[in-house]
Image (cartoon, rainbow, N blue to C red; front, side, top):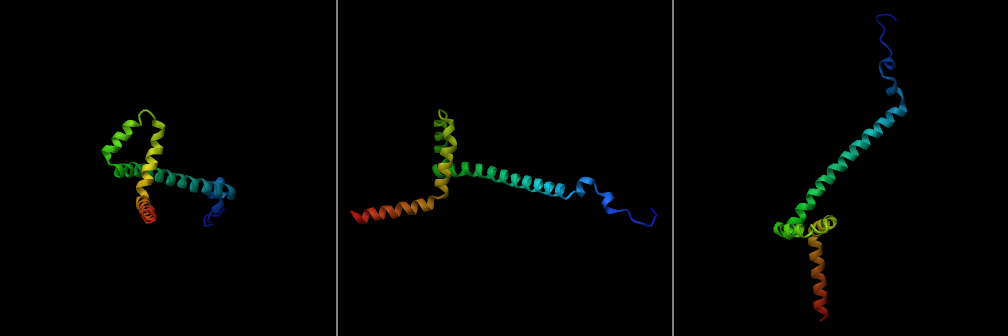
Length: 109
C-alpha cells in the first residue's frame, strides 16, 4: 500500500462493529438498560412519596402508632401504606364525592 493512500475504514473497525445484527443487538441492550434504570429511579422516588403521603394524611405520630401496630402483621404494611398514599393523592376527589353523596342523602330525607 502506498504511503499516500488512506487505510480502508472497515479495517480499522472491529469485526463485531461491522456486523449489523450485532450493532442492533447492542443498541437494544443499551435502550433496555436505560429504560430499566429509569424505571428503578421512578420506583425509588415513588416509595419515598408513599411514606410522605401516608405521614401527611394521618400525621406522623399516628403513622408511628400504625406502624407499631403492624409489627404483628408486617406483610400488610405495603398495602396499608399504598391505601393511605392513594387516599392522600385522591383526597380532593374523595371529599367531593363524600359531599355529593351527603348532599343527596340530605335531600332525600
